[in-house]
Length: 430
Image (tube, rainbow, N blue to C red; front, side, top):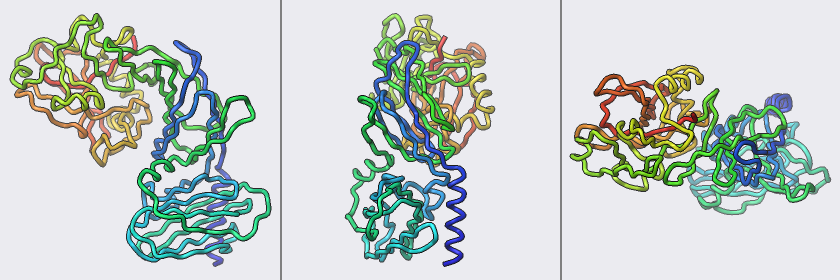
C-alpha cells in the first residue's frame, strides 16, 4: 500500500505542476467578422466537439493523459465529465469475458470504493456518484486487461458513501457520443454557453471556424486563455464548392482536394471514364477514382496535367495551382521533405490505410490519399495508400513534377510523371 501511495502521489505532483485550464473564445476577420460555428478536433487524443461561434471553449487540462495511464492503448477508456461535480460515467472495453474489478482510491492511496462483476466482451458503462472534492485514481482490472485513470471532483459539499454502480453495455453509438469528453453548461453572459472539453498538456487542436460559405482552419497547442481569430477567405470554385483554407507559414492553402468539374470561366472539364480514351489524351480531363462519384466527393477529383496547365484555370478566383518552388516553400517550412509528409497527412481518420506512419496533421493541410490514374492503360491505383498532387512546373515536354505522400512513411517525395497521369490538386492563394 505504501508503494502504491507514493506512486500515486508522484503522479499527482507531476499533474499538479503542469495542469492548466484555458478558455478559448472566437472571432472573425477578413471576408466575415462573425463566426457561425466551430469544430474543435483534438488531433492527439482523436476526439472532437462542435460549438456555436459565440460559445466559450473551456479546456479542462490534465498534466497526464488517460492514454499514458492505460495499459491498453487507444481510446478504450472514457470518463465523462472529468473534472466533474461529484458524479461521472465510466465507459471501457472488456476485451474478453471474465471477472472485472473496479477500485477507487483517494490521493493518500486509501481504497474508498470497490465493485466486481462478471462482464461479457464489449463496452460497459459504470456510474461513479457522490465523490467529494479531490483527486482520485480509478483502477479497472481483469485477468486479461487493465486500466488506470485519474479523476478530479470539484464538488465542495460533503457527501455520503461513494458508489460505483453498473449501468449496462454501451452501444457503438453511445461510445461515439461520449468519446469527445465534452459537456455543455449555460453561461451567465447572455446566450453564450461554456463547452467543456477534456484536454492534456501539449495536445494539438485543429479548430475550424465557419461563417456562411467560409471555413478557416486554425492550428493551436494551447498555452493560455485566448481568442482565436479566423481569417475568413473566399475559396469557391466554378461548381460553387466551398473549401476550407489554412495558413501555413506565409502561404494560404486549400485544406481539401479540388473537386471542380469546370474551369474558372464556367467551361466544363471533360469527365473521361474510358481507359483507352484517357491514355490518348493531350487535353484537359478529370475523373473520379474508379469512376465512382462518391470517391471524388470524399477524396477530390483526379486531373491530368493538361487540365492543370489550361489557361482557363481550374482553381477558384484568387487562387492558383502551385509551382515546384511553392511546394518546396511548404515542405521547407515543415522541416524538410523527410518529415513534412507526416505533418501534412490527416490523422484520426480511417481514410488513410494503417499505419499512416508519422501522421500528425500539425500543419492543418489535412492531406488525403486520393490515389492516381495511370497515363498508360488508364488503370486506377493507390487510394487510401498514396496521394499525388500536381505542380505547374514542367521537367520537359513529356514529364512534369508532383508531390506524393505514402501511408507507410513520413517523407514528402518530389517525383516526375507523364502529363497524362491523373493526380489530385491543391490550390494556393495568389
